[in-house]
Amino acid sequence: MQKKSTTATADFEGVYIFTNPSFKEYVKIGRAVDQTIEQRLKQLNASTAVPFSFSIYATYRTDNAVNVEKADHKMLDQYKYELRAREKSETGRDRVREFFLMEPEEAIIALQIIAMSHGNEDNVRKYEKAKDQIAEEETAKKIEKRARAAIFSFERKGIKPSTIIEFTKDSSLTAKVLDEKYIEYDGEQYTLTRLAKKFLGKEGVVGEVAGPRYFKLGGVILSNFPDVGD
Image (cartoon, rainbow, N blue to C red; front, top):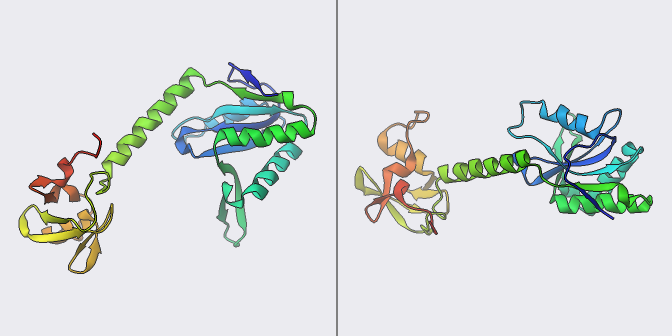
């Protein structure tokens, strides 16, 4: 049976499931040995390498955390190898991480299965979100939305492939939309910014040119097009 708690601290050793809005598609499944899970959480959050903090999603209280964590990771690897974050080391070997591409609700099921096999499923606890965690998640969502909006997308603007767009400074210079990101000019594929720099004679210039501001459709500059549904 899964326990619930309104407390976001875990002053005991065991296996944990952490979440972080910095990479919301992943959960971190690890262990705390010779320290409490709360201490492990603080240790991770002391780093400045991650924009937002880790939070406790669930814990499994056990004095056999090393083996439980190994069993959990093995179960997930066998279920779907691609779930775990991996990278090649300099020697060509896989370097595995404690991050898994899955919903936290799925991760806790695996933990419960292992707990049930040991007859102590009551030691699995899911935590309710604290106010600061909810606030961080909302902030992360807003940042992600602004980041998406900053990247021009023909698809998001409702502009379909094969549409012809014009260069604002010379309407005789046109290009064809290929997909959500690329256009075609003179048989070659470009981004809006790269082609704008070509027309402006600034191909070697870094920054300075925002492509969507230099092309228009139906007399409207692309950067002024609203997103579909806005």
